[in-house]
Image 1: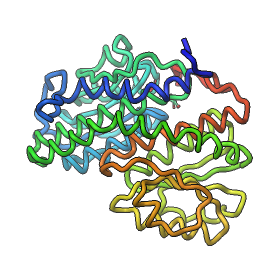
Image 2 (image 1 turned 90 degrees about the horizontal axis):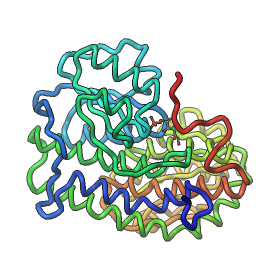
Image 3 (image 1 turned 120 degrees about the vertical axis):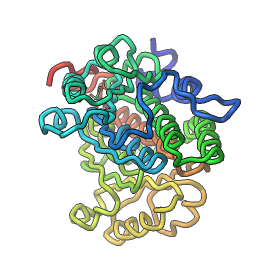
Image 4 (image 1 turned 180 degrees about the horizontal axis):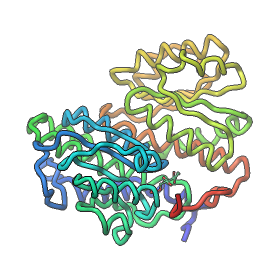
Length: 365
Ligand code: F6R
């Protein structure tokens, strides 16, 4: 049931601090500040030479962020593909490679086919799934469950952030096993993970501001989302969320790609959502924002207090997020991104929980 919420999607967005916390509790030992996977892996991360990550839609964007973490913390090369491409492109996996699949439902036809392909190639198969009795869970060698609880809204929200929590934990565990992270590094990262539920609760308090902003956004025909680093896949997710529930055309781009084409679209009618926590690449993103502002583009900047102080651009709106370490920012920044899509759809009067033409579980290709 929807509790006191108007839509399942709103309820599920608000449940995130709790279910991300449950997921965290399954993967992290708070007392020792270490990541402890709930299953014993049938391989040593030291022996893994390559990882592939495969999923569809929102789950693939979780995988995209997971790739940054696995590469950074564990120095593991990661290939990433959407399942509909992976299953037919004849990717040369080697025996002993690690193939990761991400799926809320565990029934997505393309992801399941990709899993079977990887298995046939002799790869280790590890799935991040929300439904433990699902086909993908049953057919995988290793299952890491997201503890999001049932997700009813067609647009994935809490499953996405729980997938990120699992992938972050996995990347830290891999970094430890490969000797890329010290005890102190791990403790610092785990500390960052433990903070996330509280930071998500704080981010939810920004809702009234986002609701107001959504009234503006609902007047647009097109919206551009920009981000760098781990904010780039989140920009893709933001654009997907907006288009699937509000039917406003949106695109996500790597901020650095702006001048390679999409900048031609910028004018006063094109709002640009910039996701930019104050991190190593912040200054670069600011210069991309300057390019947008110089062409009359309206900017919606999602950043923290430091970022807001540094970005001296006249932006339409700045959404000031709580201060946090940069490593896991996308888990927290997912909240305003989801809220913006949700409230825009509510203003548009669409069927938020059951958007047209979409199914919760895509069991045909
Ligand atoms: C978007 C959305 C879809 C799913 C995709 C994969 O909000 O929900 O893009 O993420 O269909 O579904 P699962 O995770 O069930 O494999």
